[in-house]
Length: 111
Image 1: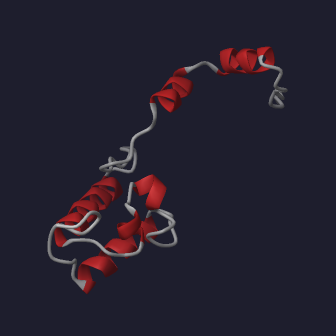
Image 2 (image 1 turned 180 degrees about the vertical axis):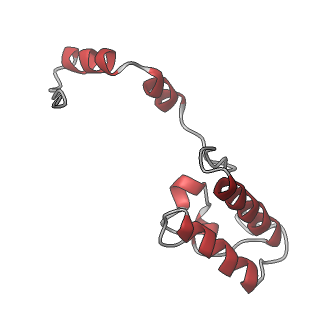
């Protein structure tokens, strides 16, 4: 099998239509728009999925619709260690570090 080639039969047009509808319901305009958040490869962003891939994404998106509080877990999409660390850092500490490095921070307006 050549690099980047699908490892199974292509998804049916019905699967692609269903997947596109679910992707659009999730707030994306098309597969390419959903590439980063959904973890699609370049091939998948072009609308080319195997049957197994399409089934997996359809299942994940349907489960997310059933429980909107639960974030969609996708294969391949991971936050970097640095992004995870920054996500847990208190805003005040992050702002202090940015100021120490000569960045300018703006405090939000409080009502």
